Length: 285
Image 1: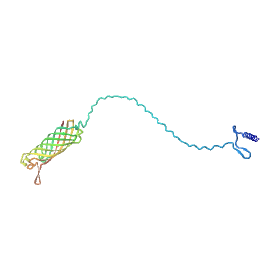
Image 2: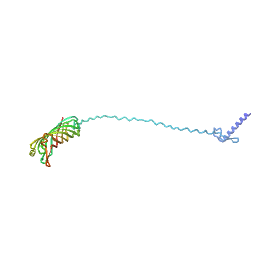
Image 3: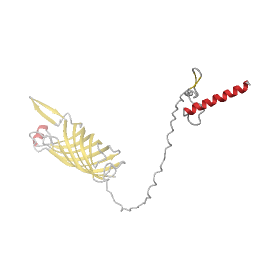
Image 4: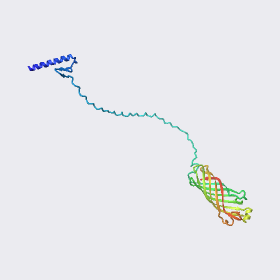
């Protein structure tokens, strides 16, 4: 009995709930509507509570790798054509160290020259001066250096106005400043001797008690010159050479070359100086 009564009660309750739910216009398919009252103050909420919020998932930023580089092959070069141009041969003439300057090898040169010699003059011997010719040999053993042997023969009137013939012989060392050029500047220094024959004028003969004399000299010289190389084997040259010398013959003491009356006394000397100029040509071999 009890089970039958309980079953009837449950059926009645469900019917009542269905009626109420229909009266409240519950949506189709809903079994229970919210806030149904049972008895005194009992409220049944038929809608389940919302689930608790899910924790926020961590945000992971993934950076995509850069795209691989793209290589482009350069376009092939255009086909080339080889053009052969034939030009006629051109003959060039050059002025070089080897052609016109020193030839770069040892050279032996022989030359001839004209010479002028100035020894100064006294007031009583106007027109003093000497001239002549000479020959020389130059051994050019390097671009900058050469050795010269020279001999000359000059004649004229000397410082005292006496007639003189003289043969100077010198050996000199030459230094060329610019051997690569056609026109070459050189300096020279050297030593030499000279032999002179003097015929005295009437006044000198009376003063000295003799008509003539022979002098011998030894001295040094220095100078500057130019040599113009016209070809590999021929050049023109010219220079000025200042010299100083003294007599070395046996009559130095008994017959001095220069005399001067000074304050009641006679002064003598055998030392002299002068300048010789030369101009000539040189053949090299």
